[in-house]
Length: 212
Image (tube, rainbow, N blue to C red; front, side, top):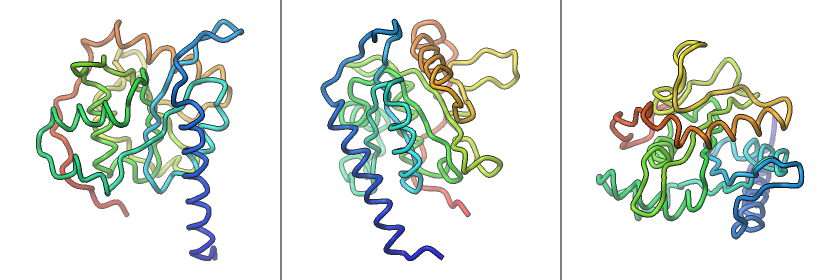
């Protein structure tokens, strides 16, 4: 059995790795690399319990996209006590999504239950006064295969059948960097080409759901 202190140490180390990535790329704009591909700036949305997996994902794909992985936490009282959907959207856009153009939702076993994940997806799908909407891409984390529930707002926006069209995508964890690059580019392009397919009508979560 893993000692609790060991688990806490690992989680703290993973958060530090994400913080380092955020600081490294904080002022980096999207650019076209020497390989001809654009590195888009992506907001990585994840459940706090999956922070190690999020850090691994960001580090493994540092040459595919520019990462911003600063999630909303329980202590962010500026928006927790608000019932104003537009205010929540604007605060998350300004303080968290920032200048990102694509939101990647890392789906673990309990991601669906977190209100902040729902808020981040909601804010990603709605343009604000200062920023356009984000593209949206969901990725199933390997450890959650067979046990994960797709967040409802993400599910509202992914294809319902293999031949259906939708604003967002939901994929299994990428085996190759080129696959992720293609998915991110498709999510970026959907901002203009598929905006009419967005379904963001679901009421915002007001509290976390129980996840066993």
